[in-house]
Length: 128
Image 1: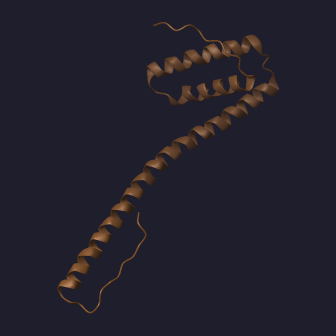
Image 2: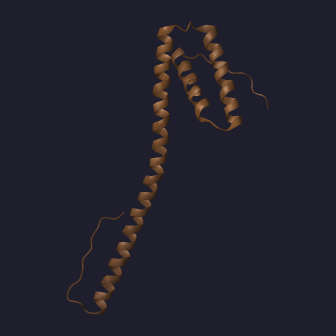
Image 3: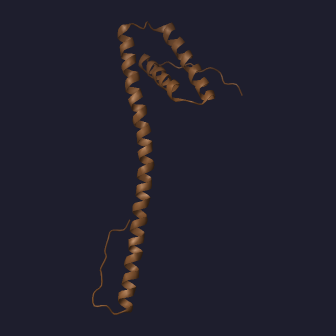
């Protein structure tokens, strides 16, 4: 099914933001097919920008600053995703330790009851 072109009004800031993100993707994307789509979209949007907006020095500077900010956001998103994987693993490990320590306490209590020990360890933790 072929899709018709969709034209939607956009702010110049949004257009330049989108182009700056595509410029970053051109550096980050390695899959050739995906990169071809990125290049195509970038060319189309740059053509629209050139046709409708005079890009002067002030606008170029703001564009550059926007690209720098977007690049930092990209890097932070990557770091956030890597950290999330680590935190999920850490949370699982912690939960496993809680469960094993609870099992350990139950076994020790059974031993103490079986042997009529005078001293019994008492454990009371919040549920997890």
